[in-house]
Image 1: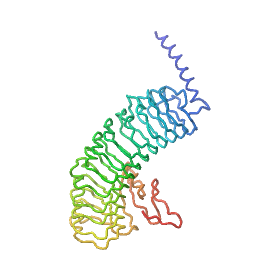
Image 2: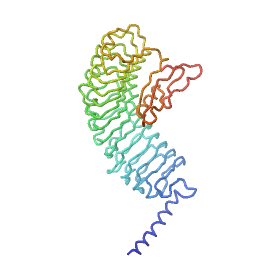
Image 3: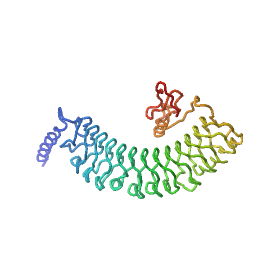
Image 4: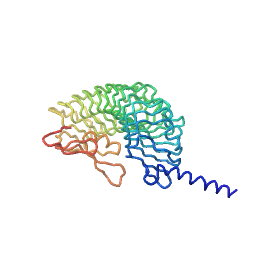
Length: 416
């Protein structure tokens, strides 16, 4: 019995290795590790998926090639595949059953392609994908039928597409989504009860769309959200009692509403935000604050720079939790002493010109937004993982959106 097992094993091993040599051997198109579990086929100008692929491969990189379509069962010979990178190709079509036989895949990267839709049955019914990235494509709507099969999905990146509508029930089959990136699309509105199925989501990015209003019901039941980014939209009003009526926001620590069309903040606008630390309201069209606009919340840092305030009256900043208020780059002419009633004695009020450079302490996810908005970030407290110190770009420099502050081009002045 032992002899027979030994013979069978001895026959099988050479067959697998000989087959693998066609894509992994010397002068082949891919580089593979000795165990044939990792394949790097990037930058090979491939127009089709190499074949045959080793059955043992777990991590496959096909990025930066010339692939135009993913045919049916393209990777079915790789049942152990967990990580598939198809970024930077020219993929337009993903056929039905394209990923059939890949029930172990947990990460799929499809950024920077030409995908406009994904067949409903592209993923197998046993889809286990956790991290799905489809940014920088041509999607006009979220491929509900496709992602509904991926019930373990936690990270969904769909930024920089042309998505103009989100249908109700879109995330009904994806209750574990925690990170949702929909920035830089063409959304104009958000349907009621949009996030009810994904109560666990804690990072939601909706910046750089065309959203005109925020409905209380749109975010209802989004109980775990810690960061909500609605910046760079067309929002002109925050609904009355939006936050106090909605327990959704009680765990939120960061709120981004900058670069909208807000003109006025009513009384108790932010009531109910008991854990909020940062609120960004800069670069709006704000002209007035109601008495007690910031009552009922716990935030420490308020960014109101780059608005249209000429007068600060009433008891506008009444809140003992506030540590810093940034009001620079406003044409303020009158500042009532009553406006400071309710603030702690050691609260910092920044009203000076942009020559003054205040700082923000941020984590890794936070700095992605700050870099885009004209901040420069450097590591802070080296022993503390993921901590950064950020400050607005100094005069003569501008935020390039990726690396931080760069010198202004010769002969030009850029105001941010």
